[in-house]
Length: 54
Image (cartoon, one colour):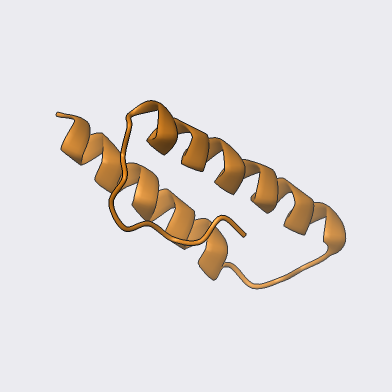
């Protein structure tokens, strides 16, 4: 079950990071979203490959 959740979290991170830059406000929001998703991966003790934390 965790495997599906992990795949979804990684997919969400990739989709957020693939979005085109619009302005500094949206960039800050995207950074916060990515940070939150990485925190969820950390909480699941996931140590496999993942997108960067930027």
